[in-house]
Image 1: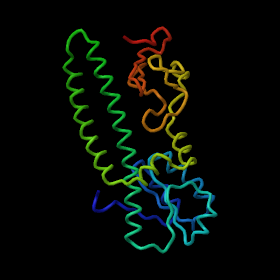
Image 2 (image 1 turned 60 degrees about the vertical axis):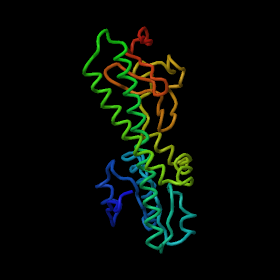
Image 3 (image 1 turned 180 degrees about the vertical axis):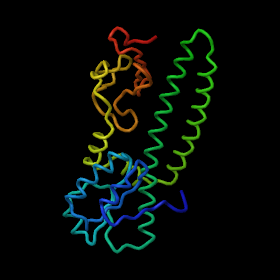
Image 4 (image 1 turned 30 degrees about the vertical axis):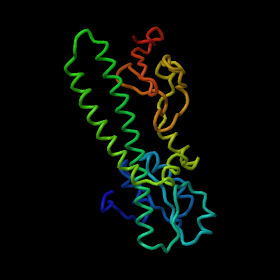
Length: 237
C-alpha cells in the first residue's frame, strides 16, 4: 500500500465539484453540508468516477441515522487518526481493487479477440502476435496487483465490495451502462452462449458485450465476436 495517499481538502461542495475527476478514489463528505446538496453531489461523483467510495462524516450517530445520502462507510467525529487512516486506506484499496479487476477483464477480452484474429488468419500476423504478447504481459502484471490487493483486504472488505449498498449500485449501473443492443443492431442475447445483453451483469461481465472496433462487438462471457451489425453476420467462424 502507498505510504501516503494523495489528499485534497475542499471547504465547499462547489469547489469540490470544480475539481472532480475520474481519479477520485474516496470522497469524505460532511453532513454539515445540506443533505439536498449531498444527494445531488453523490451521483455526480459516481458518474465521474464509478469506483469511488463514499464516506459520510458526522458529529453524531443520530445525524448519520437520519441521513438518506447513499454511502459506503461512515465516520463519527471526533475520530482518532489511526482509525481514520485505516478506514480511508481500506476504502482507497477497495476502489482500486475494483478498477484493477475491471481492467483485468478488459485485457482478457482483448486477448480473446487477438487470439481469434490470429487463429482466423491465413498467415501469421506479426502485429497481432506482438500485441498479444504485450497484452499477456500486462495481464500477468495486473494479476500480481490483484494478488497484492487481496493480501491486504480482509473478509469485511470483500463482502463490502460484493454487496455494495443497492442505491450506490444503482448509481454505478446507470453511469456505466452501454447503449441498448438494439440501438447498434445487436441481438438481445449472445449468439454464442445466450448471455442476456439487455441486463447489467456487474463489473466483470458488465452489459454482456463490448465494442472492439467499427461494427465489431464481443461477448464479455464467452468471447463470441459479432463483426457485422447486419443480422446476417451475427455468427463469426
